[in-house]
Length: 473
Ligand code: 5AD
Ligand code: SF4
Image (cartoon, rainbow, N blue to C red; front, top):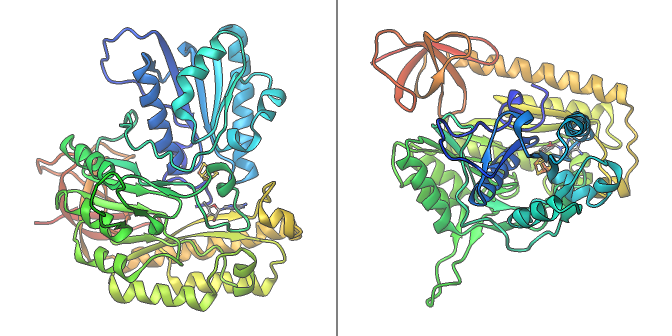
């Protein structure tokens, strides 16, 4: 699948649904649309919580909103273009409803700052990812006719104490943000500039949030961060010196909440995922056997220019280690086609590392130069668009083959599936996921099951994207 990196392409731009049967009369209604990665979707839930405390109610209907927010992404030019298009649509809406305020949140707000207020006349509020607490004040300012902006990045903001409002969830799986920002400085990436320095969230608050989710019927949490393996938290509020919590420890603590709570995490950087983490994944049944391990390129020369700090061989050894320590583990990747100076030989190295790693799934992109990044300053974006697209097509073709092969290997096997809801195609079928993250569809039959239940399913057929099976005892 060629997509912006979020779990489900169909969710890009998805707006939040209001609470069901909510009788509260709200002062104002807000509408929020999110783009980009899972972190951004999780942030929108924090924003919803902050606004709700101020007496604002959520709406799914943009036409009745007093406040329209777009939580934006800057990772590729295309993501920014989508948002710009959307903003011009809101401009029309504003004409019919003067007084409606439009706010830009997230990475584009951070990247373009006040330029946004000048360039896009329709925008009233601009707020970067670390400034959401100031939203109520900014809204007030904008209501009095002044443009309002806060794009300050923070060294310590993690919104740890804010309980996100899950407005558009299936009630079974939720994202839990465990850290913010990124210190890696991959040369192609805008994230360090838009989301600032890396910081880890208070471990206690993470565990409490996960426990609360479980108590409310949730059965799966995905721990989110740009680089979860460098999670590291020391509680300085204690008198005695508290033991630091590493990512492996955090995983364990969340897994211990209940064996019925599945734990996932994303994203891992190959340089940081430790044996201790792999041991922990292997040790706990409810930690999902699935690792998102972006390779970006299979060529050591390109990897060095990308500042990924590993070589092709080093990455391959990491994959070997995962296969050895966590048998049957699903692995997925992010891949960039046509980075600066990439040759056909480099490209073939990417295809062959995909084959070596046997990815179950990949998010694939062609290189998009981003202003201000190391690559933009240092290297020429010298691979033509035509070549980038052809190489991307090769990569997609390779992944399609690998995904189908991986699914075929599951034929005849039985997996424990967490039921997420009805299948898209039929109310007579359930849809759920295996520990490895694969989507499995199977007939409900006469069994008395509901979403959030675990069930054993034997796979008897597959497509490239889905396993098909039947419930077994
Ligand atoms: N061009 C194309 N893809 C990019 N990514 C990050 N920056 C760029 C860029 N400038 C991809 C990487 C990353 C994923 C989130 O997006 O593969 O892992
Ligand atoms: Fe997009 Fe990256 Fe910002 Fe997520 S962190 S919204 S992927 S630019």
